[in-house]
Length: 94
Image (cartoon, rainbow, N blue to C red; front, side):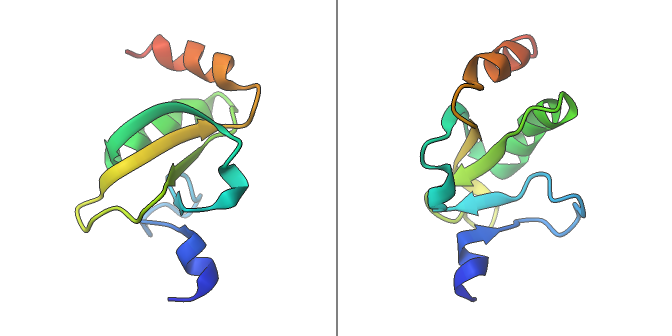
């Protein structure tokens, strides 16, 4: 696996729009704010979708590649200054 594919790896090829790709150890998102933390990719993707639908920029990140079942520490992050807007939208879904 090449350097770039390790830095940003999609864990699913069934999403041509790229929604739900997980950035693994990508420093571009180090200053982004964590809105939620999940134990698996599938759940994280489900929570990412409402943000994408609302036009809120968000990304899924992880420090380490999830296991073969999609389990791991997956973070839903938004750019600095967007946490309140994202949290308000997601809190209505709890």
